[in-house]
Length: 555
Image 1 (cartoon, rainbow, N blue to C red):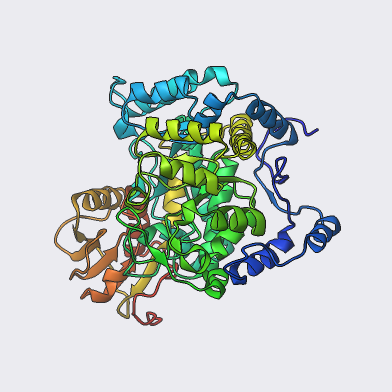
Image 2 (cartoon, rainbow, N blue to C red):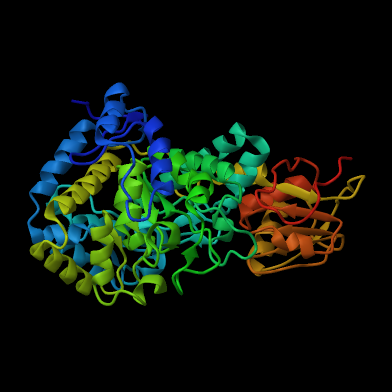
Protein backbone atom coordinates (compact mmCIF):
# COMPACT_ATOMS: atom_id res chain seq x y z
CA UNK A 1 0.00 0.00 0.00
CA UNK A 2 1.30 3.44 -0.87
CA UNK A 3 1.84 5.79 2.02
CA UNK A 4 0.22 9.24 1.99
CA UNK A 5 2.24 11.68 -0.06
CA UNK A 6 3.87 14.81 1.31
CA UNK A 7 4.81 16.56 -1.91
CA UNK A 8 3.57 16.70 -5.51
CA UNK A 9 5.08 13.85 -7.46
CA UNK A 10 4.62 11.66 -10.48
CA UNK A 11 2.96 8.32 -9.94
CA UNK A 12 1.80 5.46 -12.07
CA UNK A 13 -1.87 5.57 -12.85
CA UNK A 14 -3.81 2.48 -11.90
CA UNK A 15 -7.37 1.91 -12.97
CA UNK A 16 -10.12 1.65 -10.42
CA UNK A 17 -11.85 -1.74 -10.33
CA UNK A 18 -13.74 -2.54 -13.55
CA UNK A 19 -11.86 0.16 -15.49
CA UNK A 20 -9.80 -1.05 -18.45
CA UNK A 21 -6.00 -0.64 -18.34
CA UNK A 22 -4.05 -0.56 -21.59
CA UNK A 23 -0.42 0.48 -21.86
CA UNK A 24 0.52 3.92 -23.10
CA UNK A 25 1.95 2.29 -26.21
CA UNK A 26 -1.35 0.57 -26.82
CA UNK A 27 -3.22 3.87 -26.58
CA UNK A 28 -2.12 4.99 -30.01
CA UNK A 29 -2.77 1.62 -31.58
CA UNK A 30 -6.18 1.26 -29.99
CA UNK A 31 -7.08 4.83 -30.88
CA UNK A 32 -6.16 4.17 -34.50
CA UNK A 33 -8.39 1.10 -34.51
CA UNK A 34 -11.34 2.97 -33.09
CA UNK A 35 -11.13 6.08 -35.25
CA UNK A 36 -10.80 4.04 -38.45
CA UNK A 37 -13.14 1.18 -37.55
CA UNK A 38 -16.54 0.35 -39.02
CA UNK A 39 -19.51 2.46 -37.97
CA UNK A 40 -21.47 -0.65 -37.01
CA UNK A 41 -18.69 -2.07 -34.83
CA UNK A 42 -17.17 0.51 -32.50
CA UNK A 43 -15.15 -2.13 -30.64
CA UNK A 44 -11.38 -2.35 -31.14
CA UNK A 45 -10.37 -4.75 -33.90
CA UNK A 46 -7.70 -6.13 -31.56
CA UNK A 47 -8.82 -9.51 -30.23
CA UNK A 48 -9.31 -9.94 -26.50
CA UNK A 49 -6.42 -12.41 -26.35
CA UNK A 50 -3.98 -10.09 -28.11
CA UNK A 51 -5.10 -7.15 -25.99
CA UNK A 52 -4.51 -9.24 -22.89
CA UNK A 53 -1.09 -10.15 -24.21
CA UNK A 54 -0.27 -6.47 -24.64
CA UNK A 55 -1.23 -5.84 -21.02
CA UNK A 56 0.85 -8.79 -19.82
CA UNK A 57 3.91 -7.79 -21.82
CA UNK A 58 4.04 -4.19 -20.61
CA UNK A 59 3.26 -2.62 -17.29
CA UNK A 60 1.47 0.71 -17.07
CA UNK A 61 3.91 3.47 -17.97
CA UNK A 62 1.66 6.51 -17.71
CA UNK A 63 2.78 8.91 -15.05
CA UNK A 64 1.03 11.85 -13.51
CA UNK A 65 -0.74 13.28 -10.53
CA UNK A 66 -3.01 10.36 -9.63
CA UNK A 67 -4.64 8.99 -6.48
CA UNK A 68 -2.66 6.62 -4.31
CA UNK A 69 -3.68 3.00 -3.86
CA UNK A 70 -4.97 3.86 -0.40
CA UNK A 71 -7.05 6.75 -1.73
CA UNK A 72 -8.52 4.55 -4.46
CA UNK A 73 -9.41 1.81 -2.00
CA UNK A 74 -11.05 4.31 0.34
CA UNK A 75 -12.96 5.82 -2.58
CA UNK A 76 -14.33 2.45 -3.66
CA UNK A 77 -15.43 1.72 -0.10
CA UNK A 78 -17.20 5.06 0.23
CA UNK A 79 -18.85 4.81 -3.18
CA UNK A 80 -20.12 1.30 -2.46
CA UNK A 81 -21.68 2.52 0.79
CA UNK A 82 -23.76 5.28 -0.80
CA UNK A 83 -27.53 4.66 -0.80
CA UNK A 84 -29.11 5.18 -4.22
CA UNK A 85 -30.53 8.52 -3.12
CA UNK A 86 -27.02 9.82 -2.42
CA UNK A 87 -25.45 8.06 -5.39
CA UNK A 88 -27.79 9.95 -7.73
CA UNK A 89 -26.59 13.30 -6.41
CA UNK A 90 -22.95 12.24 -6.45
CA UNK A 91 -23.14 12.09 -10.26
CA UNK A 92 -24.15 15.74 -10.69
CA UNK A 93 -22.40 19.11 -10.36
CA UNK A 94 -25.15 21.64 -9.69
CA UNK A 95 -25.81 24.91 -11.41
CA UNK A 96 -25.81 27.63 -8.75
CA UNK A 97 -29.02 29.67 -8.63
CA UNK A 98 -28.73 30.80 -5.02
CA UNK A 99 -26.47 30.15 -2.08
CA UNK A 100 -29.23 28.50 -0.07
CA UNK A 101 -30.16 26.11 -2.88
CA UNK A 102 -26.52 25.23 -3.50
CA UNK A 103 -25.95 24.35 0.14
CA UNK A 104 -29.19 22.35 0.27
CA UNK A 105 -28.27 20.33 -2.82
CA UNK A 106 -24.96 19.36 -1.24
CA UNK A 107 -26.43 18.69 2.19
CA UNK A 108 -29.74 17.04 1.29
CA UNK A 109 -29.24 15.64 -2.21
CA UNK A 110 -25.55 14.71 -1.92
CA UNK A 111 -24.61 16.56 -5.12
CA UNK A 112 -20.96 16.03 -5.99
CA UNK A 113 -20.38 19.75 -6.13
CA UNK A 114 -21.60 23.16 -7.20
CA UNK A 115 -20.33 25.44 -9.94
CA UNK A 116 -20.05 28.83 -8.26
CA UNK A 117 -18.33 32.05 -9.28
CA UNK A 118 -17.70 35.19 -7.31
CA UNK A 119 -20.56 37.00 -9.02
CA UNK A 120 -23.03 34.37 -7.75
CA UNK A 121 -22.09 34.72 -4.11
CA UNK A 122 -24.67 37.30 -3.20
CA UNK A 123 -25.59 36.78 0.43
CA UNK A 124 -22.20 36.57 2.09
CA UNK A 125 -21.56 40.09 3.24
CA UNK A 126 -18.00 41.16 3.91
CA UNK A 127 -16.11 44.05 2.42
CA UNK A 128 -13.65 41.67 0.75
CA UNK A 129 -14.91 39.79 -2.35
CA UNK A 130 -12.18 37.16 -2.01
CA UNK A 131 -13.15 36.51 1.59
CA UNK A 132 -16.76 36.10 0.41
CA UNK A 133 -15.60 33.43 -2.04
CA UNK A 134 -13.53 31.64 0.59
CA UNK A 135 -16.35 31.80 3.13
CA UNK A 136 -18.95 30.34 0.80
CA UNK A 137 -16.66 27.62 -0.50
CA UNK A 138 -16.03 26.66 3.10
CA UNK A 139 -19.79 26.58 3.71
CA UNK A 140 -20.10 24.13 0.80
CA UNK A 141 -17.52 21.84 2.42
CA UNK A 142 -19.31 22.08 5.76
CA UNK A 143 -22.61 21.18 4.07
CA UNK A 144 -21.00 17.97 2.84
CA UNK A 145 -18.98 17.23 5.96
CA UNK A 146 -20.89 14.08 6.79
CA UNK A 147 -19.88 12.28 3.61
CA UNK A 148 -16.24 11.79 4.61
CA UNK A 149 -14.67 13.28 1.47
CA UNK A 150 -14.57 16.76 -0.04
CA UNK A 151 -17.25 18.46 -2.07
CA UNK A 152 -16.10 19.29 -5.59
CA UNK A 153 -15.84 23.07 -5.99
CA UNK A 154 -14.94 23.75 -9.64
CA UNK A 155 -14.35 26.92 -11.62
CA UNK A 156 -13.78 27.99 -15.22
CA UNK A 157 -10.47 29.85 -14.95
CA UNK A 158 -8.64 29.47 -18.26
CA UNK A 159 -7.02 32.91 -18.44
CA UNK A 160 -7.88 35.79 -20.73
CA UNK A 161 -11.61 36.24 -21.28
CA UNK A 162 -12.55 33.09 -19.36
CA UNK A 163 -11.61 34.08 -15.82
CA UNK A 164 -14.52 33.91 -13.40
CA UNK A 165 -12.43 35.44 -10.63
CA UNK A 166 -10.13 38.39 -11.20
CA UNK A 167 -8.97 40.99 -8.71
CA UNK A 168 -7.50 40.33 -6.17
CA UNK A 169 -6.34 37.07 -7.79
CA UNK A 170 -3.49 37.24 -10.28
CA UNK A 171 -4.77 37.46 -13.84
CA UNK A 172 -3.18 35.44 -16.62
CA UNK A 173 -3.14 35.82 -20.41
CA UNK A 174 -5.23 33.78 -22.84
CA UNK A 175 -4.23 30.16 -23.42
CA UNK A 176 -3.13 31.14 -26.93
CA UNK A 177 -0.15 32.68 -25.17
CA UNK A 178 0.92 29.13 -24.30
CA UNK A 179 1.03 28.21 -27.98
CA UNK A 180 3.02 31.33 -28.87
CA UNK A 181 5.50 30.72 -26.04
CA UNK A 182 6.03 27.07 -26.97
CA UNK A 183 6.24 27.81 -30.71
CA UNK A 184 8.88 30.43 -30.03
CA UNK A 185 10.83 28.95 -27.14
CA UNK A 186 10.18 25.21 -27.06
CA UNK A 187 10.87 23.65 -23.67
CA UNK A 188 11.45 27.03 -22.03
CA UNK A 189 8.05 28.16 -23.24
CA UNK A 190 6.44 25.00 -21.88
CA UNK A 191 8.13 25.63 -18.51
CA UNK A 192 6.62 29.14 -18.44
CA UNK A 193 3.19 27.65 -19.11
CA UNK A 194 3.59 25.16 -16.27
CA UNK A 195 4.77 27.89 -13.91
CA UNK A 196 1.72 30.01 -14.80
CA UNK A 197 -0.85 27.25 -14.28
CA UNK A 198 0.89 26.12 -11.10
CA UNK A 199 0.58 29.69 -9.80
CA UNK A 200 -3.04 30.00 -10.91
CA UNK A 201 -3.88 26.63 -9.38
CA UNK A 202 -2.25 27.58 -6.09
CA UNK A 203 -4.33 30.77 -5.88
CA UNK A 204 -7.55 28.96 -6.76
CA UNK A 205 -6.87 26.39 -4.09
CA UNK A 206 -6.21 29.12 -1.54
CA UNK A 207 -9.63 30.53 -2.45
CA UNK A 208 -11.31 27.19 -1.76
CA UNK A 209 -11.48 25.65 -5.24
CA UNK A 210 -10.25 22.12 -5.84
CA UNK A 211 -11.10 21.73 -9.53
CA UNK A 212 -10.45 23.85 -12.62
CA UNK A 213 -12.11 23.28 -15.98
CA UNK A 214 -9.01 24.00 -18.05
CA UNK A 215 -7.00 23.85 -20.25
CA UNK A 216 -8.64 23.82 -23.68
CA UNK A 217 -7.47 20.97 -25.90
CA UNK A 218 -9.37 22.45 -28.83
CA UNK A 219 -7.51 23.36 -32.02
CA UNK A 220 -8.75 26.68 -33.33
CA UNK A 221 -9.97 26.85 -36.92
CA UNK A 222 -8.94 30.50 -37.25
CA UNK A 223 -10.99 33.69 -37.66
CA UNK A 224 -14.19 31.67 -38.28
CA UNK A 225 -13.94 30.15 -34.80
CA UNK A 226 -17.09 31.38 -33.01
CA UNK A 227 -16.41 30.50 -29.39
CA UNK A 228 -12.94 29.02 -28.76
CA UNK A 229 -10.59 31.58 -30.35
CA UNK A 230 -7.83 32.58 -27.94
CA UNK A 231 -8.93 29.88 -25.51
CA UNK A 232 -7.06 27.50 -27.82
CA UNK A 233 -3.27 27.33 -27.82
CA UNK A 234 -3.29 27.50 -31.62
CA UNK A 235 -3.92 25.77 -34.91
CA UNK A 236 -1.01 23.29 -34.85
CA UNK A 237 -2.05 20.03 -33.14
CA UNK A 238 1.47 19.33 -31.89
CA UNK A 239 1.85 22.78 -30.33
CA UNK A 240 -1.59 22.53 -28.73
CA UNK A 241 -0.70 19.09 -27.36
CA UNK A 242 2.50 20.42 -25.78
CA UNK A 243 0.63 23.37 -24.29
CA UNK A 244 -2.06 21.13 -22.81
CA UNK A 245 0.49 18.83 -21.16
CA UNK A 246 2.43 21.78 -19.75
CA UNK A 247 -0.74 23.34 -18.34
CA UNK A 248 -2.00 20.11 -16.79
CA UNK A 249 1.36 19.58 -15.12
CA UNK A 250 1.15 22.99 -13.45
CA UNK A 251 -2.34 22.47 -12.10
CA UNK A 252 -1.36 19.04 -10.81
CA UNK A 253 1.67 20.44 -9.03
CA UNK A 254 -0.68 22.86 -7.29
CA UNK A 255 -2.89 19.98 -6.16
CA UNK A 256 -5.87 20.99 -8.29
CA UNK A 257 -7.97 18.63 -10.41
CA UNK A 258 -7.90 19.84 -14.02
CA UNK A 259 -10.16 18.83 -16.91
CA UNK A 260 -9.02 19.17 -20.52
CA UNK A 261 -11.84 20.27 -22.80
CA UNK A 262 -13.83 19.84 -25.11
CA UNK A 263 -13.29 16.23 -26.22
CA UNK A 264 -12.87 15.27 -29.04
CA UNK A 265 -12.17 18.88 -30.03
CA UNK A 266 -14.39 21.94 -30.53
CA UNK A 267 -12.79 22.59 -33.90
CA UNK A 268 -15.97 23.84 -35.57
CA UNK A 269 -17.67 27.02 -36.78
CA UNK A 270 -20.86 26.69 -34.69
CA UNK A 271 -21.22 27.85 -31.10
CA UNK A 272 -22.48 24.90 -29.02
CA UNK A 273 -24.11 27.35 -26.60
CA UNK A 274 -26.62 27.99 -29.38
CA UNK A 275 -26.82 24.78 -31.42
CA UNK A 276 -25.19 21.42 -32.06
CA UNK A 277 -21.98 21.84 -34.07
CA UNK A 278 -21.01 19.12 -36.53
CA UNK A 279 -17.39 18.02 -36.38
CA UNK A 280 -16.99 16.79 -39.93
CA UNK A 281 -13.47 15.38 -39.64
CA UNK A 282 -13.22 11.88 -41.03
CA UNK A 283 -11.65 9.20 -38.88
CA UNK A 284 -8.18 9.71 -40.30
CA UNK A 285 -8.25 13.44 -39.55
CA UNK A 286 -9.66 12.87 -36.10
CA UNK A 287 -6.71 10.65 -35.34
CA UNK A 288 -4.03 12.85 -36.91
CA UNK A 289 -5.43 16.23 -35.88
CA UNK A 290 -8.33 16.68 -33.45
CA UNK A 291 -7.38 13.98 -30.96
CA UNK A 292 -3.68 14.78 -30.60
CA UNK A 293 -4.00 17.14 -27.61
CA UNK A 294 -6.28 14.72 -25.78
CA UNK A 295 -4.06 11.71 -26.45
CA UNK A 296 -1.12 13.72 -25.12
CA UNK A 297 -3.14 14.61 -22.01
CA UNK A 298 -4.06 10.97 -21.49
CA UNK A 299 -0.43 9.89 -21.83
CA UNK A 300 0.40 12.52 -19.19
CA UNK A 301 -2.31 11.08 -16.93
CA UNK A 302 -4.49 14.18 -16.92
CA UNK A 303 -7.01 13.95 -14.06
CA UNK A 304 -10.07 14.88 -16.12
CA UNK A 305 -11.48 15.34 -19.60
CA UNK A 306 -14.60 17.35 -20.40
CA UNK A 307 -16.68 16.17 -23.32
CA UNK A 308 -18.08 18.65 -25.82
CA UNK A 309 -21.55 18.99 -27.26
CA UNK A 310 -20.42 18.05 -30.76
CA UNK A 311 -21.91 15.86 -33.45
CA UNK A 312 -18.92 13.68 -34.36
CA UNK A 313 -20.43 12.53 -37.63
CA UNK A 314 -17.76 9.93 -38.39
CA UNK A 315 -18.39 8.12 -35.10
CA UNK A 316 -22.00 8.63 -33.96
CA UNK A 317 -23.85 10.87 -36.38
CA UNK A 318 -26.54 13.07 -34.90
CA UNK A 319 -25.66 12.34 -31.26
CA UNK A 320 -23.73 14.90 -29.17
CA UNK A 321 -20.38 13.49 -28.11
CA UNK A 322 -21.37 14.27 -24.52
CA UNK A 323 -24.32 11.86 -24.91
CA UNK A 324 -22.60 9.23 -27.06
CA UNK A 325 -21.55 5.90 -25.58
CA UNK A 326 -19.55 5.23 -28.75
CA UNK A 327 -17.52 8.39 -28.17
CA UNK A 328 -17.14 8.22 -24.37
CA UNK A 329 -17.17 4.58 -23.28
CA UNK A 330 -15.94 2.84 -26.43
CA UNK A 331 -13.67 5.60 -27.61
CA UNK A 332 -12.33 7.58 -24.69
CA UNK A 333 -12.47 4.87 -22.02
CA UNK A 334 -11.76 1.60 -23.81
CA UNK A 335 -9.72 2.58 -26.86
CA UNK A 336 -7.84 5.63 -25.64
CA UNK A 337 -7.42 4.05 -22.18
CA UNK A 338 -8.58 7.02 -20.16
CA UNK A 339 -9.43 6.12 -16.58
CA UNK A 340 -9.62 9.60 -15.11
CA UNK A 341 -12.73 11.71 -14.63
CA UNK A 342 -15.11 12.27 -17.55
CA UNK A 343 -17.20 15.41 -17.11
CA UNK A 344 -19.87 16.63 -19.49
CA UNK A 345 -19.90 20.21 -20.69
CA UNK A 346 -22.68 22.32 -19.21
CA UNK A 347 -26.04 20.66 -19.80
CA UNK A 348 -27.73 24.05 -19.85
CA UNK A 349 -26.34 24.84 -23.31
CA UNK A 350 -28.48 25.08 -26.41
CA UNK A 351 -26.84 22.12 -28.13
CA UNK A 352 -28.44 19.72 -25.62
CA UNK A 353 -31.44 21.64 -24.26
CA UNK A 354 -32.97 21.68 -27.74
CA UNK A 355 -32.79 17.87 -27.94
CA UNK A 356 -33.15 16.53 -24.39
CA UNK A 357 -35.99 17.92 -22.26
CA UNK A 358 -36.11 17.95 -18.47
CA UNK A 359 -33.58 15.66 -16.83
CA UNK A 360 -33.07 13.54 -19.96
CA UNK A 361 -29.74 15.15 -20.85
CA UNK A 362 -28.31 14.33 -17.41
CA UNK A 363 -29.39 10.70 -17.65
CA UNK A 364 -28.07 10.35 -21.21
CA UNK A 365 -24.69 11.90 -20.32
CA UNK A 366 -24.26 9.45 -17.44
CA UNK A 367 -25.43 6.47 -19.49
CA UNK A 368 -22.89 7.40 -22.17
CA UNK A 369 -20.10 7.15 -19.61
CA UNK A 370 -19.73 10.54 -17.94
CA UNK A 371 -18.75 10.39 -14.29
CA UNK A 372 -20.15 13.85 -13.64
CA UNK A 373 -23.02 15.67 -15.36
CA UNK A 374 -22.29 19.39 -15.26
CA UNK A 375 -24.78 22.15 -14.56
CA UNK A 376 -28.15 20.79 -15.69
CA UNK A 377 -30.70 23.45 -16.51
CA UNK A 378 -32.88 22.31 -13.59
CA UNK A 379 -31.05 20.70 -10.67
CA UNK A 380 -34.08 19.02 -9.10
CA UNK A 381 -35.37 17.63 -12.39
CA UNK A 382 -31.93 16.24 -13.12
CA UNK A 383 -31.66 14.61 -9.69
CA UNK A 384 -35.12 13.05 -9.92
CA UNK A 385 -34.40 11.71 -13.40
CA UNK A 386 -31.07 10.17 -12.38
CA UNK A 387 -32.55 8.57 -9.25
CA UNK A 388 -35.40 7.09 -11.30
CA UNK A 389 -32.91 5.78 -13.88
CA UNK A 390 -30.82 4.15 -11.15
CA UNK A 391 -33.88 2.50 -9.62
CA UNK A 392 -35.06 1.18 -12.98
CA UNK A 393 -31.62 0.01 -14.07
CA UNK A 394 -31.51 2.38 -17.03
CA UNK A 395 -28.29 3.65 -15.46
CA UNK A 396 -26.43 0.53 -14.28
CA UNK A 397 -25.69 0.80 -10.59
CA UNK A 398 -22.23 -0.73 -11.00
CA UNK A 399 -21.31 1.92 -13.55
CA UNK A 400 -22.63 4.69 -11.31
CA UNK A 401 -20.63 3.46 -8.31
CA UNK A 402 -17.46 3.22 -10.41
CA UNK A 403 -18.03 6.84 -11.48
CA UNK A 404 -18.56 7.94 -7.89
CA UNK A 405 -15.37 6.13 -6.85
CA UNK A 406 -13.33 7.93 -9.51
CA UNK A 407 -14.61 11.30 -8.35
CA UNK A 408 -14.06 10.53 -4.67
CA UNK A 409 -10.53 9.23 -5.30
CA UNK A 410 -9.47 12.45 -7.01
CA UNK A 411 -11.12 14.60 -4.36
CA UNK A 412 -9.27 12.71 -1.63
CA UNK A 413 -6.03 13.06 -3.57
CA UNK A 414 -6.49 16.80 -4.03
CA UNK A 415 -7.28 17.23 -0.34
CA UNK A 416 -4.12 15.33 0.64
CA UNK A 417 -1.85 17.25 -1.73
CA UNK A 418 0.24 19.92 0.01
CA UNK A 419 -0.69 23.52 -0.63
CA UNK A 420 1.91 25.65 -2.37
CA UNK A 421 3.00 28.90 -0.71
CA UNK A 422 1.82 32.26 -1.97
CA UNK A 423 -1.17 34.47 -1.38
CA UNK A 424 -3.81 35.21 -4.04
CA UNK A 425 -2.54 38.04 -6.22
CA UNK A 426 1.12 37.27 -5.55
CA UNK A 427 2.02 35.61 -8.87
CA UNK A 428 2.33 38.56 -11.23
CA UNK A 429 5.86 37.49 -12.13
CA UNK A 430 4.66 34.14 -13.47
CA UNK A 431 1.91 35.82 -15.47
CA UNK A 432 4.31 38.40 -16.88
CA UNK A 433 6.90 35.73 -17.71
CA UNK A 434 4.37 33.83 -19.83
CA UNK A 435 3.29 37.00 -21.64
CA UNK A 436 6.94 37.89 -22.23
CA UNK A 437 7.63 34.46 -23.72
CA UNK A 438 4.53 34.73 -25.90
CA UNK A 439 4.85 38.30 -27.17
CA UNK A 440 5.31 38.19 -30.93
CA UNK A 441 6.54 40.92 -33.25
CA UNK A 442 4.55 40.39 -36.43
CA UNK A 443 5.85 43.43 -38.34
CA UNK A 444 8.30 46.26 -37.69
CA UNK A 445 10.31 48.87 -39.60
CA UNK A 446 14.06 48.72 -39.97
CA UNK A 447 15.80 50.20 -38.15
CA UNK A 448 13.50 49.78 -35.14
CA UNK A 449 12.71 53.27 -33.87
CA UNK A 450 13.24 54.19 -30.25
CA UNK A 451 10.14 55.06 -28.26
CA UNK A 452 10.36 57.84 -25.70
CA UNK A 453 6.68 58.52 -25.03
CA UNK A 454 3.42 56.84 -25.96
CA UNK A 455 -0.23 57.65 -26.53
CA UNK A 456 -2.30 54.50 -25.93
CA UNK A 457 -5.83 53.84 -27.20
CA UNK A 458 -8.25 50.93 -26.83
CA UNK A 459 -10.65 49.66 -24.20
CA UNK A 460 -10.59 51.47 -20.87
CA UNK A 461 -9.43 48.27 -19.16
CA UNK A 462 -6.50 47.72 -21.53
CA UNK A 463 -5.45 51.37 -21.52
CA UNK A 464 -5.54 51.49 -17.72
CA UNK A 465 -3.35 48.41 -17.50
CA UNK A 466 -0.95 49.86 -20.07
CA UNK A 467 -0.70 53.12 -18.14
CA UNK A 468 0.24 51.25 -14.96
CA UNK A 469 2.95 49.30 -16.77
CA UNK A 470 4.28 52.38 -18.54
CA UNK A 471 4.44 54.38 -15.32
CA UNK A 472 6.30 51.56 -13.58
CA UNK A 473 8.83 51.48 -16.43
CA UNK A 474 9.25 55.26 -16.54
CA UNK A 475 7.76 55.51 -20.04
CA UNK A 476 5.89 58.83 -20.35
CA UNK A 477 2.26 58.89 -21.46
CA UNK A 478 1.52 61.80 -23.80
CA UNK A 479 2.18 63.00 -27.32
CA UNK A 480 4.47 60.54 -29.05
CA UNK A 481 4.21 57.05 -30.48
CA UNK A 482 0.58 56.03 -30.87
CA UNK A 483 -0.19 52.51 -29.58
CA UNK A 484 -3.55 50.94 -30.43
CA UNK A 485 -4.58 48.03 -28.24
CA UNK A 486 -6.92 45.68 -30.14
CA UNK A 487 -9.29 43.93 -27.79
CA UNK A 488 -11.60 40.94 -28.35
CA UNK A 489 -13.93 41.55 -31.27
CA UNK A 490 -11.97 44.56 -32.57
CA UNK A 491 -11.01 43.78 -36.14
CA UNK A 492 -8.51 46.51 -37.00
CA UNK A 493 -6.90 49.79 -35.99
CA UNK A 494 -4.47 52.38 -37.30
CA UNK A 495 -1.54 53.65 -35.24
CA UNK A 496 2.25 53.68 -35.11
CA UNK A 497 2.07 50.43 -33.16
CA UNK A 498 -0.93 48.09 -33.22
CA UNK A 499 -1.07 45.42 -30.52
CA UNK A 500 -3.55 42.55 -30.43
CA UNK A 501 -4.46 41.53 -26.90
CA UNK A 502 -6.64 38.52 -27.74
CA UNK A 503 -6.46 36.68 -31.09
CA UNK A 504 -3.98 38.27 -33.54
CA UNK A 505 -6.13 38.19 -36.70
CA UNK A 506 -6.87 41.92 -36.63
CA UNK A 507 -3.19 42.69 -37.17
CA UNK A 508 -3.48 41.69 -40.85
CA UNK A 509 -6.14 44.36 -41.38
CA UNK A 510 -4.42 47.08 -39.39
CA UNK A 511 -2.41 49.92 -40.89
CA UNK A 512 0.72 50.18 -38.77
CA UNK A 513 4.45 49.82 -39.39
CA UNK A 514 4.83 47.89 -36.14
CA UNK A 515 2.48 45.06 -35.17
CA UNK A 516 2.71 43.00 -31.99
CA UNK A 517 0.65 40.02 -30.83
CA UNK A 518 0.36 40.01 -27.03
CA UNK A 519 -2.49 37.56 -26.11
CA UNK A 520 -3.36 39.38 -22.87
CA UNK A 521 -4.59 42.76 -21.66
CA UNK A 522 -3.90 42.77 -17.93
CA UNK A 523 -1.10 44.57 -16.11
CA UNK A 524 1.41 41.68 -16.26
CA UNK A 525 0.88 41.39 -20.03
CA UNK A 526 1.28 45.15 -20.47
CA UNK A 527 4.52 45.05 -18.49
CA UNK A 528 5.82 42.53 -21.01
CA UNK A 529 4.67 44.79 -23.87
CA UNK A 530 6.25 47.93 -22.44
CA UNK A 531 9.56 46.09 -22.06
CA UNK A 532 9.43 45.30 -25.78
CA UNK A 533 8.49 48.85 -26.76
CA UNK A 534 11.32 50.37 -24.72
CA UNK A 535 13.87 47.89 -26.07
CA UNK A 536 14.43 46.24 -22.70
CA UNK A 537 13.20 42.88 -24.01
CA UNK A 538 12.87 41.11 -27.33
CA UNK A 539 9.57 39.62 -28.39
CA UNK A 540 10.52 36.16 -29.57
CA UNK A 541 7.24 34.30 -29.39
CA UNK A 542 5.85 32.89 -32.63
CA UNK A 543 2.34 33.16 -33.97
CA UNK A 544 0.48 29.96 -33.11
CA UNK A 545 -2.05 30.71 -35.87
CA UNK A 546 -1.85 32.03 -39.42
CA UNK A 547 -2.79 35.69 -39.77
CA UNK A 548 -1.85 36.02 -43.44
CA UNK A 549 1.27 38.15 -42.96
CA UNK A 550 4.86 37.34 -43.96
CA UNK A 551 7.49 36.89 -41.27
CA UNK A 552 9.07 40.21 -40.28
CA UNK A 553 12.45 41.01 -41.76
CA UNK A 554 15.55 40.96 -39.61
CA UNK A 555 17.20 44.32 -38.87
